[in-house]
Image (tube, rainbow, N blue to C red; front, top):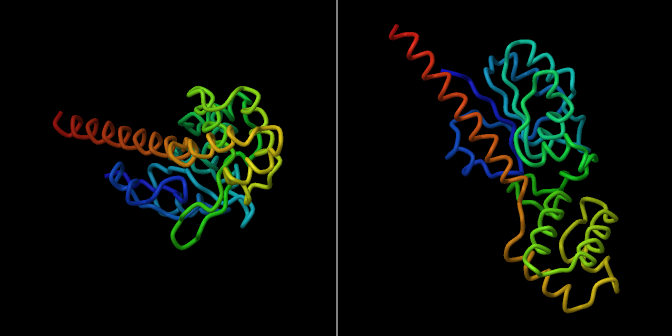
Length: 226
């Protein structure tokens, strides 16, 4: 049976993750944690969440060590998406919309996926910029905001330091660029139906790993029968 180790934090709660993929879930990855997973005999490593500013981030070198050891390394959603976009040509597998946005240069900064969260509950205390982007696009598509309001809100979001990013905060920072009725309409929309691209990509990565593991198990079973 394959040993699967997944580094997961605020992108997706562990209870939901476990329903998708039976794996050994570890907290957000920091520098050296991938090497520990290699030493622990991982066959597949899922890198979803990792530290950015709280500690030293996962190094490219340790991912390369894992890949060269024959381990499948899958990245998505947060730190995983960022590292996969940088290392997919060296053997890392990237999954999801955020990975593709980093890959094609639509987004470039690590603060697109950074947030602050309660270390005990894992509850997010700020909104990652990538989710704000997707919510704004969704709101414009639904006719909640105009392209002009979209641009003003996105500009406001980008100007706010990532630990302070919330929908009420960016609406306030946008100031008189957006009328009060539009702000109220957008905030109601964001509260009721916000986009959570990080969660969606984390789920996609776990589903990919699950399917990969099932194919591997089926292949080994067929070889055994032969």
